[in-house]
Length: 220
Image (cartoon, rainbow, N blue to C red):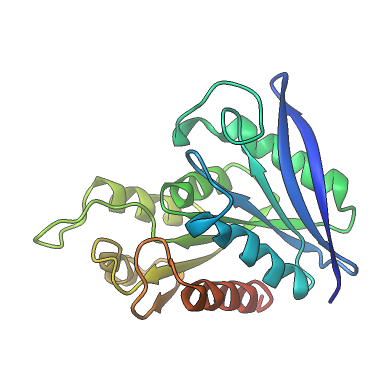
């Protein structure tokens, strides 16, 4: 399906934020907002987001990627991953304004951005699902749940929507999560990409992540 790529400018607390919207010619009512963290560079591993957006838009799923305050082309002071609520809220408002067909969103995040997406999803009724890639966890030799793993479990328990967890097979820290999720009977689909590391830094792994994401988003 043909998709238009459109630059989007919107405001957050008086600062100008910049995003890129991948808009299919016949957009579905469920879109994806990509939550990012820290300084991003548009080639290398972070080109993952561009390639993901193209695959999803080709399936009819509109996608908005954006630079939060203090990052990339957006104005404002740099902020921590725990202080993005206003930025995400502003991006959601802009997304719905740009795509009248939208009725609900999936938040998609990698690493610590996955933690931010899960935290925000609990407070926004228009967020129907989350895709979490390798939530940022510290490895432990005894495989016991650390504080960050407990935050993931608490976030899933407090979220009423659908959840997809995608893990790299070589990320030893994140591999503890499926067993913990099953033990606590939490509603979350878990998928492991064999051989992939923390950032899915190969075209084959990124393509598999995009396919898994697209298929899951269209399945409910």
